[in-house]
Amino acid sequence: MSRINEVSVGGRRLKLSNLDKIFYPDVGFAKGEVIDYYTRIAPVLLPHLNDRPLTMKRYPDGVDGKFFYEKQKPSHAPAWVKSIKVQGRRPVDYILGNDLATLVWLANLADLELHTSLSKKKPLQRPTAIAFDLDPGPPAAMLESAQVALLLRDLLADLDLEAWPKTSGSKGIQIYVPINGAVTYDDTKPFAHAVAKILEKQHPDLVVSKMLKKLRTGKVLIDWSQNDEHKTTVSVYSLRARERPTVSTPLEWGELEQVVEDADASALDFVSDDVLGRVDRSGDLFAPVLERKQKLPKLA
Image 1 (cartoon, one colour):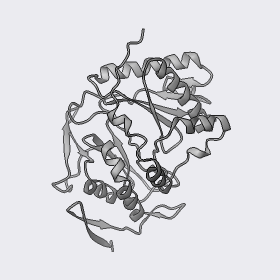
Image 2: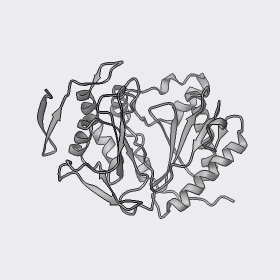
Image 3: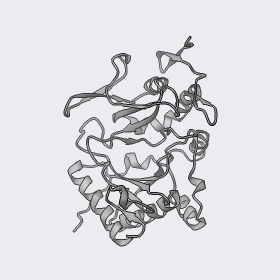
Image 4: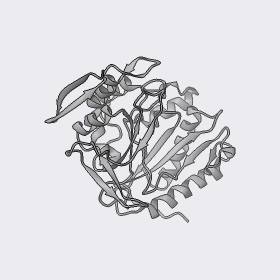
């Protein structure tokens, strides 16, 4: 029989179930610990979720079980869970992760991963940032992703753009370029594609910009395609469904420089407790992505 715990979160009454259920079997990390992590990380996570359409990635039987993506707000969602209806081939009512009660409710649904839009609900056509997802093709791995991240940082700097890195929480690195201005995806997606192609041309042995798997062996794909109104990307501070509760973790550029110098990327492997400690020491390293305003240059 499912054990139900009733709690009050932010003035909302929530029923939490199966808190002892193991979600990460390799390390014995339970559902209750997932909820605890999201509760403790909420002060820095919620600003990055605020007013952004959210795609759930749910693992009701833990990371070793079947999972499914869910975009539509469930019919059983409490009335206080905010959402935004997005028109497409069919209308989708996306959840907005705007408060702690909603975050805990999502975690109780076994929504281990939080995937958000690059834009806020108004206007949806305007991304607040450009995202580059650096995805290594074996035998390339995190070290090669770090090398490409630094190359990308330097290229963007030549264009008078500042960028912020984070781990994907999986095998790659993601680079965010805050814009927070009047641009649309019709501006940012071609720009991201052009930047990826420039870096591919400059470093053909290391970088690829095309999605074809046969071209990616031993190289790092700069995935520019996430810059799209209809796509969502894993949020900073989100857990990932790996063997351990790894987290998409903000980085300092110096950390990536040290990894490349040491030729050892093990320092970029962060689990939930690591991230909570980093936030206690350094605050939200990704906060500038929410605030920094930059102009998108024109590429010849």
